[in-house]
Image (cartoon, rainbow, N blue to C red):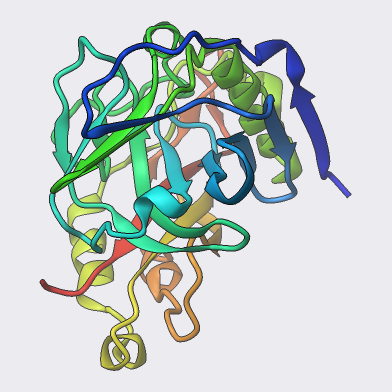
Length: 293
């Protein structure tokens, strides 16, 4: 069993109430950060508010990345609509970004707002297909930007809710440790990945992605099911896919991704170790299944 739960009590902060505009709801933390070193994912979580007004915020990672899934839940999100235009920001100086998160239920907290992947520096959801240069080295969360975080603010129509997190740099450092630990559970060499000079580069991405996107499971479409999944493939030193795993990040009864069938034909330039030699590694993607609005 890999699962351990580490309470980051040193990261708890005392907040001083600040005056806010009437339409902004600011909710202070009521627990320390806790990080769950799960068998398949890392979850960084904290409770905000008291009693019937409790809320939860958690970041999740299924593999090392500069992005993390983000979920916020509690009574303040009861009027948020699914895939509706929503502003997201992490500090007062940051220009909020337009996003379209999912909504859903979180056990024990009720209505929630769910992002597939966010980066606190960029402040918006990303599908990692924005034309940016690929990561050459092992990606990690941006601790410098996390140090400037004041809150996680989401605004939709007249609802503007801020969970007052304070800086996230120490919490994100713990998440990086957890995500690195996951690599070892896949049978890969963690130290090789710490010092790798290049992660695998997907050379036929465009054609494979088209196949995955076109193959939205028909049964799920018929029942209007949408969701977020995480896909991980092991890439051998020759650049071929050795294994593929898909994990559901959101609950869905009929939504089973066919992505692994398509990934059997994926080709990669292999990862390179510190000496520039090909090594066994992995490539990971977030897959968002959504129906047209």
